[in-house]
Length: 385
Length: 136
Image (cartoon, rainbow over the protein chains, first blue to last red):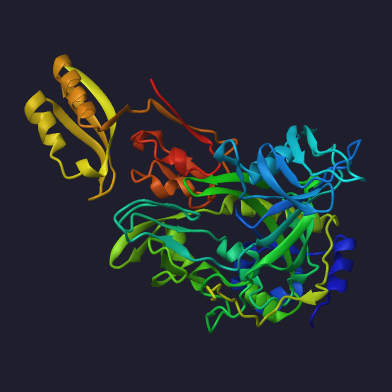
């Protein structure tokens, strides 16, 4: 008998919901089978904790007296986008400090704000009749401002490619330091615990889904940018074999914690934000029980040569997450050590926290109000003359 | 006899020079290469232990400086702030002696000091800046 979101929420309300993590469910299905697990388990919690560059926060500073229509805004010398009304600004995670360069960026501003630190706000304006002030220079804290909304256009990638380097020099990338001559191979996905890997066809995860975001409850606002459901998929598991679906996430920054939101620096590449995301998957039926039971040995990704700085990087083959997690893979007959960039350790913590929230009736499922696109083209940017 | 541990960085134009040979032949030093990564036409890095007379070591170091090899003392210690570390694993990518590794059960980062060659490559590799290097 298929279940509904409403029925599962009723169980959560009564403290009767059976909740397990996406790792725990694998053994359960092995032991009891998909049919039984679909009947017995209500919710499976998934999670990821990794660098997600397309992240940032929308802030409303409140009005000074006399007021200012802020046209250029800097937070600790990091430029924020202020082309939205008078005192709204968007601080992007990857924007670099104008005085400290790659040592400090938008992600650090966000981390400083949630740590309760004072952040210097500088703004300039041309001055208007209604907003006469032309300059502002003072300090804000997360408590002193109005809204602080974490709004991340592209998070929680459904799978990601493995990065390696065939050239004879070290390269510095958003996939970490890649040593020459296939010196290492870096991967960045929580695989069998990862949200969109466990719902490969977006049956339960959609616009409006309530999630764990940065330590509090947030929502999926939309499909993420570069959402690419048409990516090549494994015929049997339906899981994409390379980066595919993405999520646009939103939540209240004021409730978030440094435990699940951290600024990160990729050496000689730039600044990014490490984001903790957890998504509950309701086991509506046997098919969902099947999807969540797929484990690392059946989840594959593509190895790319990052020494070729082109849109299409050379494809060096396919590898399972089981092999990646073993610590060594084979590329062109060479044994290559692997390293993860996303923290499975922290993702497990998030999956456990979300599980406890649901068990204790602190977190209810929200049925998607709209499905994520299942057929949408990911377009390139070509130079047109 | 004196001993000294240093980290050498070679500019690309010196990578094909027989520098180690010169140190042995001209300055009568016993060399122990603890770690080396030299790629043609690119930068080279080497962790080296020198053993020899005080004068030989000093002259050898001067020779290296004269030919524009960057000489740094070997770090005394690598400090990992376990409280701040999220166990992402980005540092293990550059740690060839495998002093830094992931525990395959808990997926927590582990640091085995006995395997560490103190090369310091993990410091820039850590996205959170929680690995620090300490010099004498």
